[in-house]
Amino acid sequence: MERHSSNIYIWYNSINMEYIHKMKDVVYRNYDRYAIKHLLMEIGAHAMRMECERKFLTFPKRLGLFFLEQNDFCTFLRYNYPQKGIISIMKIDRWELPEKGWERVKLQ
Figure 1 (cartoon, rainbow, N blue to C red):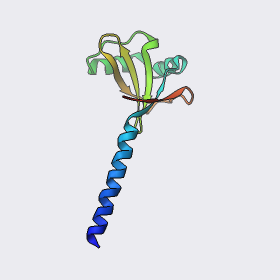
Figure 2 (cartoon, helix red, strand yellow):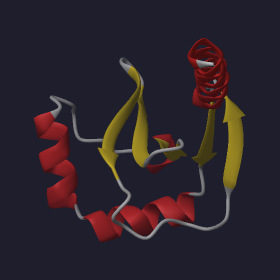
Figure 3 (tube, rainbow, N blue to C red):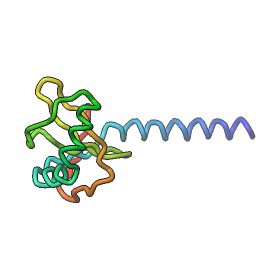
């Protein structure tokens, strides 16, 4: 009986791990400039500058290169640096997030 229950436990864990692995490949992104502009004003230049300094990033200047990305656990403000690529600047779960404009994206 004990061996049977351990096999079920292993089977159950493997199914859960497959589900979690598949869900890691899906995120939701928001490119709405209006929502991002208001979020950036709410965050403030000082907080943004402090986060950029902490991560050794240059201060972002172009609104069109910002986007929001949400996974199962949290939401990030991300920026597409021309030389470095896409980098998460900060976690933004404590600010008010937009309700519209989210797109489901499957990552490679």
